[in-house]
Length: 66
Image (tube, rainbow, N blue to C red; front, side, top):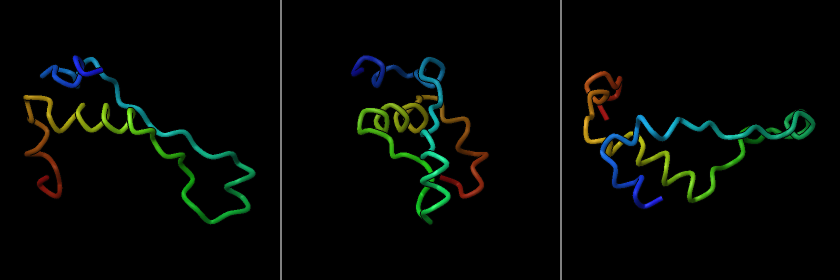
């Protein structure tokens, strides 16, 4: 994983991952977040995928200028 995190074009190699959803039964009876949390490893991979890609061409299109 460390090798991937140091790769400047990892946004090409590491695909976007969406969190899993909680079961329908759980969502029908609770008013809480419907998505399962990411693990620490998943968070690290996804955060490095975009913000440190080495080619931040997407920053200028960000609506909040992040």
